[in-house]
Length: 97
Picture: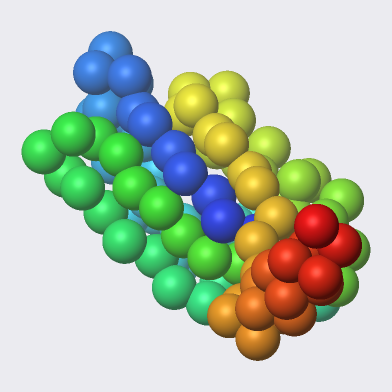
């Protein structure tokens, strides 16, 4: 299942989160659990925010991993689907009206 994660860093937490992010590339504590893959990640450095897309076979694994960040970063996690699945839902919805 795909999930979109949006985040916002409070200005007071900026330096700590920047340091944590830099460390995360070499510290195995931040390794993703099996069954969780980051599809892509984009940063808006001017606004201290960003978004990413995740593929997870079990959302609880992703939620557990996000605990590395949730103490200092506001996170919003939403399920999302691709165009083919959305199109099928839209078509089914239109036939019911």
